[in-house]
Image 1 (cartoon, rainbow, N blue to C red):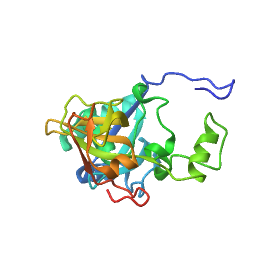
Image 2 (image 1 turned 135 degrees about the vertical axis):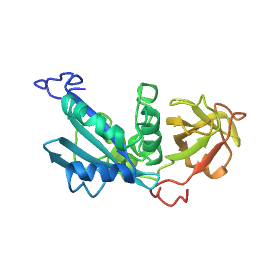
Image 3 (image 1 turned 90 degrees about the vertical axis):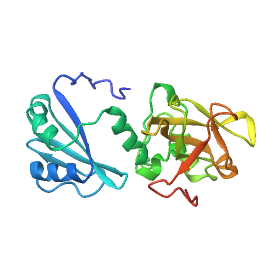
Image 4 (image 1 turned 180 degrees about the vertical axis):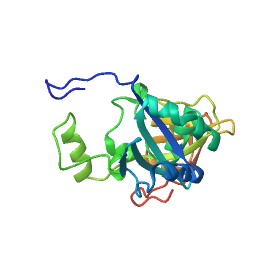
Length: 231
């Protein structure tokens, strides 16, 4: 939403293009286009071709986002497609999930405090700046008490699993213990997902999709540390 009355928003979709890149081959192609690339996640390079942002790595490879004019992107596309393998939105979403970077959608809006989905671990929350709706709750979660929920990476053998679906602990089957934040097809008939979950349920072990009788969640290693958890 717009915080300042004088701010004006406009749809730039017809004039601005964004392309995502991942993998060592993509890194080489981008070096040929831009020269030196941003060295750390979320560093950026402003160039005559546009803005290049280094994103969080995924699956052992760097990721980048190129923001440019639609005209420039269209000119570059044939050469890029000849050197790299174009992939769809699902592949990009899967990479973001394996980078441990959550994305909020309409189905998960207003469901989480930022720390529940690891935002402060990603540098996505500034505790020195304000004000914003819910700031007191966010600060209280950070400085008082111990967090009881986090987002973790899981593989689910259920192709229908999607953002907003609830997950259940077999040890406490009557109420959900968490919710899928993001999910994308993993190429094996199921999905990989970021799942917001009670840490107590995670420690108990057996977590299922949709109900206590649903498909089991197989926990995968996270790309960054979650407090004292070993995942």
